[in-house]
Image (cartoon, rainbow, N blue to C red; front, side, top):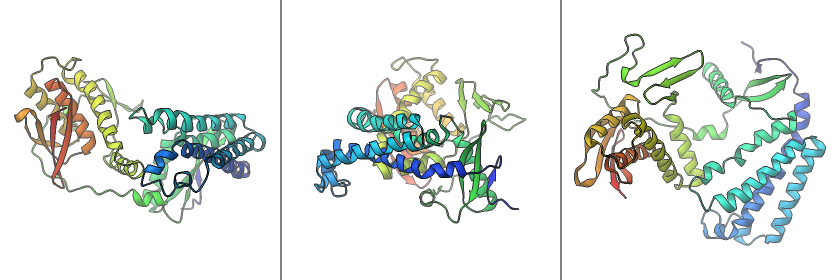
Length: 370
């Protein structure tokens, strides 16, 4: 088999390649300006943080503030000029200005000190690099199927047993992806390793569909012509997502941003579960309404096993707390948010969850009122 490069349609990269150096320099200038402003605005906080006080020049006192302002201005003006006069794209220059304003002022000065979801909403500038490059080279904006690129690259790596990279380009009205073999995997791939503990055996049984074997309680409807699976009990769309993805993503977020991400994850899952548990088990009822607590708890815990989130083997509600032992747990922070929502609906009080590891395949969660 010969495929030094695979693409949907053959083309030349001459035009895109000629524009690539100025595009990269322009993006470097815009991104550098945003980072300069971020360090100017946060220099006092950076000086108190062990992670930043010696490595960032303003926090360490190795650079004056006015020099940093000059650098920010030069980088921004230089990057914008490259977008406009070399790449010929006012759109890319405008998007670059938006990125600097969003990151430096909205995210750094306003959002970060005020809201626990700042890293989610503030992630927009971090995703602007491909958008800027697309606008500078193509002259417009589009929504190429980036997830499809990941699927195609992964398929080639699985088939050929070697790493691949990908590149998007436009051919007429079409978006085309080119897949090329690489001598080694990128550095980030070396970090994305994940070990799954050995699963424990279970004894749960569910009535199954005689045709497909799926438990009938799931009430799933497949619409393969649309690429959609619907959960008819909750009227929500379902997708198959492996447990590997959130575990690795959360671990990398922790490495970059610290353990402060976990309360955000737990709280987000709690709010999501509150809504869906009300709809699925309580007919849309509100927190505080009278609930048959034990029947509700058993029903919710049963669905954990049904959806592959873990096997609850024991629960106890003595002393005003809820303790749940789950074998083969899916992801501890997401389960903590889900169990907190279950307790809140069952008891009518806000709650928080903690957990301890009994063995590599078993966690004991304790949910207590706050």
